[in-house]
Length: 307
Ligand SMILES: Cc1cc2nc3c(=O)[nH]c(=O)nc-3n(C[C@H](O)[C@H](O)[C@H](O)COP(=O)(O)OP(=O)(O)OC[C@H]3O[C@@H](n4cnc5c(N)ncnc54)[C@H](O)[C@@H]3O)c2cc1C
Image (cartoon, rainbow, N blue to C red):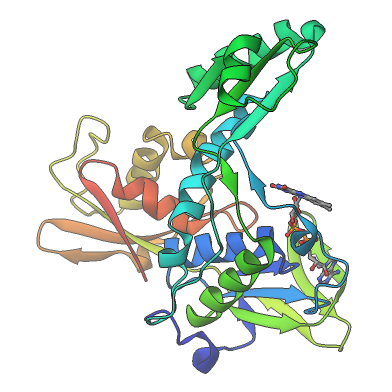
């Protein structure tokens, strides 16, 4: 099913429900939808005027000058997305201008902050950030109007900048809608769960959103086997057990950090020539089939297709 047809085939069942259509919720919807064009996604927003939301209030600074490696890496990923946002979020020929300006960021500290700034500077460099150390004389040379007598040092990151957060919000909204993500103007009032499983969301309007039944991936294992999957899958009654063992040997559970529990019964196997196909279903509570598909796609002699 090509992207964009979600509304017409909507059975009221979803693969993913995202609560809150701010920058984060919409970015998640965009990423999931582009990773898996069949993923049925709804984003529920209680106030589409965004009167109290954070995103339109943000100053719009996007920087890599962080202390924690995780934050630096998040920015290493996200800033290049903003740099090409206008093209990525274009709908038909309409680009999404967010006014991205690569003006750089400058962090300045007093003498007592120099050791901390130096530690952060080294960490940022290790993570590939384009940063420059500026002692007070260098700072004065670059910014002549600055009084530097009481300053310890500065770090300038040349590739950071700022943008218009409201334009980002609207760009994401328009794009995800064009990709078939359902935007629901309503408030989530209740989440019904069964253990770790979400069974339904109740909206203020009374509407209930429910998860779609598990989708399965069809995995094809070469009968030749491979160094990482040396079980020859040439059919036979124990094929499910052997494929199960093969999947375990690929360390998918570890790679995905999920429980890969259920392999479909032999009635779901299919023979074509010397190859055996069977449906592999992740454990209901933990599996994200699109991730499993991606991992399998990268494994020699094993590939997968969404069904
Ligand atoms: C003054 C200010 C300046 C900032 N400056 C920067 C900056 O320069 N750079 C930067 O990177 N970050 C900045 N931030 C932080 C940034 O704005 C936030 O990190 C970001 O916008 C968070 O996005 P979000 O989607 O999580 O939240 P939001 O934009 O708040 O979106 C959450 C949405 O969820 C909706 N919602 C909540 N509950 C429900 C429910 N039950 N049902 C349905 N919908 C619901 C809300 O209505 C809201 O629209 C700033 C923040 C503020 C406040």
